[in-house]
Image (cartoon, rainbow, N blue to C red):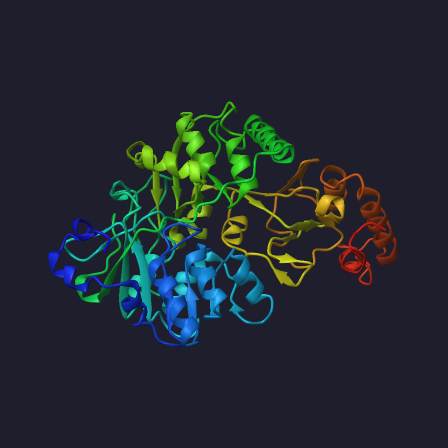
Length: 501
């Protein structure tokens, strides 16, 4: 048995230590199971693995609610045994993706800031039956010290009939004090979220739970499934440089302070590369109000460029995780993790003037963005928090390489095959080819700027020809489209393997 007794500060709770298999036995078919975790960080591992083994022997399904994506021990293990009936609000696991794109899992993709409130209201098919939560330790009062993410954990613990706690011994106790736990009241009783600065603390360092709600405690020594980022390539570096030059222009124009406004950056390699580009820039005292704290933000802190970063999860690479754990006392002075309904709050984003930077699968010439679906039908991951920030930020940027699949796909198309962010949400588009500032432009003006600045040369003539013919055919309508051709590029790729004529 893994020694966790020193992490349980109320010794009356020692009698509730059980095996993962014993804990999994409390989970019944069709339960709504809420877990900790946001990206492969801070999610339960031992109990889901035991639950998957049980499901393999006696098939049944649960409804799984998390903060966002989680690691293979949760999404992967349960998907492999067809153990998930419904899933929300975000995922990145390959096996789960196959299941939800083949009709085996009903997937509810939604804005991350809304997921906790919807679960509390019971809109998702009832309330949380059981919460499975990873923790560093349990306080004398029975409250939970989170690990590397906050996500929706505090809300699920509040709502659940009972809680299963995994004490993870790979997570350092020094994480205590890194969290700011605040769960807002629901309408009509909600009060303003009292955050006016990135480094404001408004809650507790623990998740309120209480001894009576803890059903059992499970030891775990499985670490977070952290992953390497793709190397920073020429395209990512070019996009980062374009963004930095644009910000310098905004400062000269008097539209931003010298240290910019608080930065929000999405998940993944491109977003990490863009943030990393600030390390060698002239910017200092940068503030970050975002979802995930990745390697690039550790780089900023180590370079003395970071004033403060607020997120809901640490999502580093394996090397970044080592740095985080080795210097955690120093990082705690400049970083905090909050529940995702606070980290992704539209109210806070609008108040503090966030610069939102996220990635797109594709965008069209009129400024709409598809960030979720491949060829309009196949779900990739989900909208995540990009919508929370895009519509409410002071400035919204979307990044994408100009082409994909070795040039067989243009990321700039006549019309998006699926739309997550409308033309009304986005201010700036950036590819490795250039930057299109579309603020204040009509759809036809946007189209020319996007084609000229962002599209790949192989596709620019095709896009311009489409626009010219659409304008003529519609007599220069507000948003000219040839409806029988608008999605023909996607159709051509599916039929021939290339968008090129």
